Length: 352
Figure 1: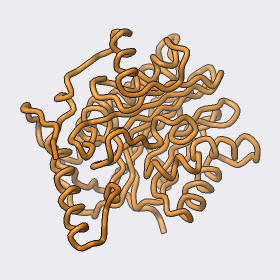
Figure 2 (figure 1 turned 135 degrees about the horizontal axis):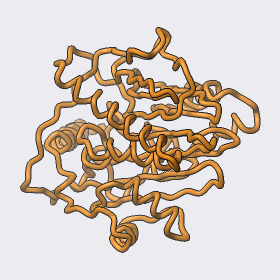
Figure 3 (figure 1 turned 180 degrees about the vertical axis):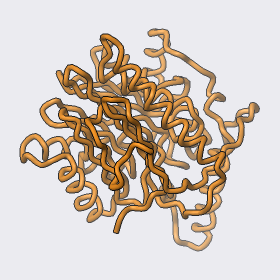
Figure 4 (figure 1 turned 45 degrees about the vertical axis):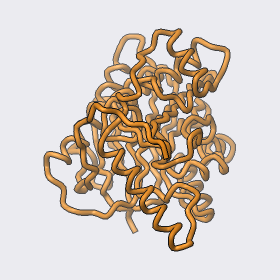
């Protein structure tokens, strides 16, 4: 098998568990004390817990805090919008090698990084997305540009890259996305696949991920408008050209001022089949469920029954936030309108 390889090695970043810390301003039950204006996620999964060196823990938490601060700063500008906040927060996460988006994207079975992202605003239900791109540094910015500078919603592959180039977005060599940690993850996945085939168990599809590192954000601005966005590198060892839910409006991302904003992370095929993001918004809009009730209906009931694993963050126009995940753990954070911030560690277990 021919592998794409880059001669420039990135710094090694270990995916190690977090200890269960909460932000100093968060109430004991984890719920925000005030109106939330921005909520973000950095993935969900079930990696085994173990003690984490303080330095590594700090690296992950610092990036999440930087993303929240960037989004909050965008909201505080005179004409700052929820779209600005979502884009700003996700760009920080895309620029970090720690998360499966942008710089930290996983590899396909051919050894390439294929990136997906989408963004949507809740006032007029405008949306934009890109999928399968390999040279766009910040796919979330490309997604917003598709929404604002084209007549389309979703552009893929070479067409999306050509459009981004014409719009003078930040274009990079594919080597930019190469990291040793993700390369080793691909090798490990392929080795396990070979072993499974030797045992005649078969494994044509990518092995079940232990961690979904997709990133996302939902924001509420002072005009009462919602926006949501999601960005990912997909699944390790995925087939070339495979798309998950992240670039699909209604599956991985949705925003409607009459309901809520939603960003998802998880096994994308299930999120597409169950139109998770839109279904959550529909339950809020048409059945009058709270954002937490709607999120749990999809994640804890429908997805779990179907065998789908993952998580969602949801925010409504009143600043009510909901988080729901059926994996063992989830990493997320939020900031309230008074600037108080909380980052909840990925390795905080789901309450029994």
